[in-house]
Length: 282
Image (cartoon, rainbow, N blue to C red; front, top):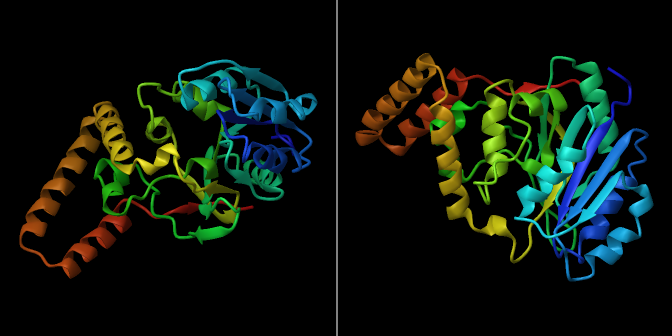
């Protein structure tokens, strides 16, 4: 692979004038020599477009028109993307310094790796880091097929994920708009059908937690995630369906007569049984 593969970054935006400039600068100021940066605005009315226009000459593509929501905007952006490596960064999140160079290094050194997640970082509205996590929990699709995400609201962090175009195309090359909150989750489940998720312990980006964002509706997100689990589980081979059914059955019997300590032991065994995180060379 080229030392500097073309990286396509899409930013969907709607009325995020407070944060959009910080997002844009976090991408452009990387100084990455083979960047394709695409912004799709949903017809903002808060001054976002004025801010974006300031950087229009540095963008590969810019569109502002009404849409059906964030994932519709992301689909429009990726439809214009031509990069070998792909990701999106929402208009209130930010990239870490030189993270695109880290991406290039990882994918160049690891030709077998098609999908990477960096450890998640959360910032507040003042851009102060409030949480970082380096322990990979979500390393297997079985984590979701066994509904372990419901235990501690553990999910794959979208802003920390990057993948090759080849995996995107194998998974259908689109976001499923039937999931208004969890289309990212559904994309990961489709990725799992074709490849493994790898991890890096360095920081790639930060998710901004703020008042009024859609991700606050955790109940709806879990409901849609479970709908995606059911949809994708139907496509699994019979052997994998049987494994899921057996583990669920054993867990149900064990939990009827087990204390919390034994339940924790079960989850530890389960995680070991279904594999350990795969880490990449940077």
